[in-house]
Image 1 (cartoon, rainbow, N blue to C red):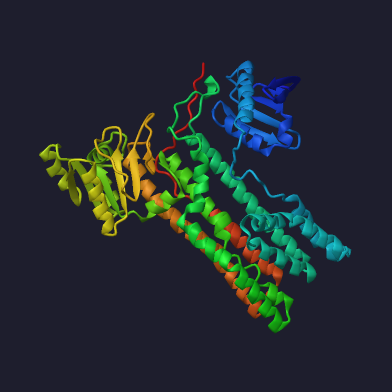
Image 2 (cartoon, rainbow, N blue to C red):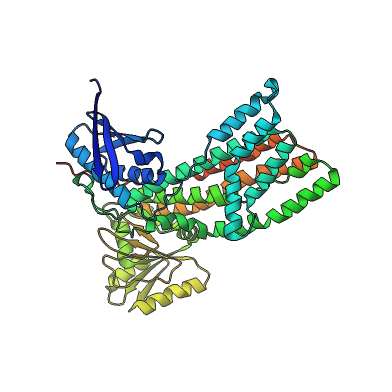
Length: 520
């Protein structure tokens, strides 16, 4: 079938757009705003993800166009109506929204600087040209240093990179400087792209929103407050790992500068002095921890588990004691949805924690209580919430990290005194629990515990991948001298490998919930 061309200009609220080309299953729109407003593009991209009727989209920022692929069973007027509503809603939702990863590093200038540095020697290009291109390509570094100094009153690790880059330009090592900028740009763009991609998936899985069209009519996965979406990503800053690394990374900057100056004075060798400057202990702040945490939150979401923030994820990794309400325990063990046999279910929990406890009401049947006592370490019999809170407090005083698990659709008592609160929930139930298990399936609980521990190990492992080679390269460079080009490949390459390792989340054992279409 030949492609027809039909230009139809429409206005949706304040957004002008037009149909440029269309054939069954594919339509191309021109939206001038896409040229200059990347945030708008990200919001529109998210809206297009809300229905599986649209099978794909391809944005061309420079042309201000988007090509949309959709199921051919949908008629043209219907898809145009949907797109019109999406285009308008992307405008209305734009107030104050920040989408992770929406700022992309410019890779063009570093690439040009790299190409120029490669041909500079054989073509005898002036050093001023290659040095000028490298300085121009390093503008994002200068911007981050300026922002850090104006907002926090301190110089960040980018200041060390600028000094190192300046030393390379002064020493004529233009290729090393250009390569460092290219690897840094690749790392930055990889990180931003993956954060955006993962953030979009979290948005689709969890955000509670009004249906903008019958095509996207679906049951909300969970009734989460709209502002929660950004909190998932902001919470990375509050994780213990980030709080541990921040002062170390920031505190190492001044000693590094002093040590570098000392090496320069003692040896008179600028190369050895500058070899200390790439000592970056803050790689976790930008890449390792954010990617590991957001990747884990997304993986949990795919399995039907909502983890409220990064701190909760870390705390889950430390849980050694599970305290169940009797309803939650019976729901998980005997749920028809669970494919895990009873004995295997108990064993799976035993392998992951030191202690299992069940809380029952004093009014529960004694035969039930006697039966439960054969399955767990202890059965707490309580008459009210105060006694429940007291039992959990006593466990915490003993040094245990406690997760309280209830079924808020049927429990008489609940508690917020544990280190982590987990609830089994369906439908439109609202809860303030740290973790919500959407599926009444023990595998979701087991997987959530495993995921938290795996994520913590992976984050520290990624940090080691990034820092150990860096430390070795810096040490060799200071003591014996190391070609800056080799040092750059070691430092930049290890940072990229660390980010890739952070994305390798443990695979969910439960099929993900998919968006359903309500088609006429």
